[in-house]
Image 1: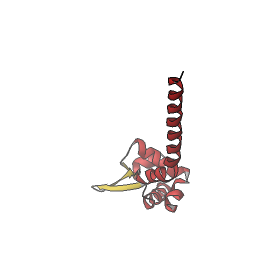
Image 2: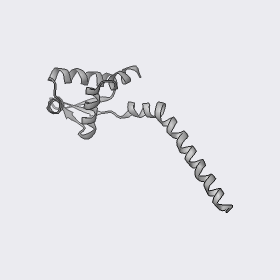
Image 3: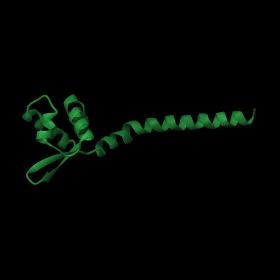
Length: 106
């Protein structure tokens, strides 16, 4: 989890993830065209994203394609965010049921 949060802490890496979300399976050249930094800098950011398992790569001939891996983000959601959403959903369900009960008695 530490590598994951470290990778997500950087705005440039989040921008790369956003680009891959829109257009998955891009080469380094295609990613560099959308960034305002050197090829070497993009490569370093991509390596950190790969280490955090946020980006996976597949070779297509001699070309290395980068794909967004949403699984780690889903794990963050389920561990840190989803449990809070569940409480809100339960509270809204309970409120709805209480209001429906009140309207029956009127």
